[in-house]
Image (cartoon, rainbow, N blue to C red; front, side, top):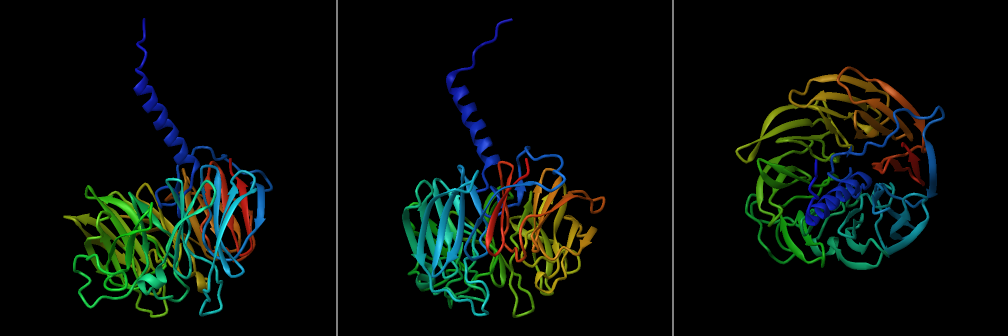
Length: 430
């Protein structure tokens, strides 16, 4: 039997597709991974850890802040504060060797004497690194060598308020736009009005889109203060949306022009509160949550608008961390991290029914890798547990960091990157 040779264009396209799939599995280029959903798609993790825990490949002393590490094209990007400068640093992801550094001065001071470092996680796209500092500096640098491409002082341009703990959005790249929850000056016009392209300091400028090549403002939309969540992009009802939690609302925007597609109030009744979790999207279902006596809300897109399915403060009330989704189930940290009342829970997405809970984890961030949960606690423990509705089944636990872990971790090419207040570690989970 003779086989026909595939045409060269087909082979070239197949190679490109294979390469792209490999890159997606190997990179963790933004907050919560390639799709901002906390899911690792690689198949290279070991079935079991060594007796003494997974091997630490390297570790490094670092500056202040809660920005998570990200990994792209073999480089780990870290955003910290060192002295009076916010610093973007590139390391070799395999061995931690420094590659380049870019820094600029910052005058940010935390009102509560808390950590003065940046909170927003860097985003890498199209060979560029985008960072958003605690004092509102949005910067774009080259991934190859760290050279500055452009920057915008959002606090100055949009009269962005400092809030409780500074500005904390992790930039979202969607198409040609870099989208940031700036929380700019309020407008006297209704928040329901379609956005207008006005002078930056006038009008609704909560969500702002910048041209990723030049930093030019493409659109700005809505009128509210910022939250400590970050926007996500999702296709709902066949249409692309930007989904964002602001200080007091849940909104959907058209990524092309910032047009408000829907909005609804969503704010804790406690004044001294923050909304930190990102929306979790599964098909046409959207789950949002906040602590401080507000709780979780599951919606389903119906006729272009999200319709309530269930709401409860008793099932899955998220303070800082974002829930991950698998097979119709949500996994997340229920309760208040700051008062030590958190519990890892498995909840049915469609009904809100709690399948199981595991208390005593002292707050944690959660990633999903295949059928396993990777739980990084605030005490620096890395826990591996089954992502199953049949109860909490822990399979491994290791101490990899010290206390005070708040930043999300990154998982790229089988390597787990995490930070506490003073150090960054790379742990081999392959």
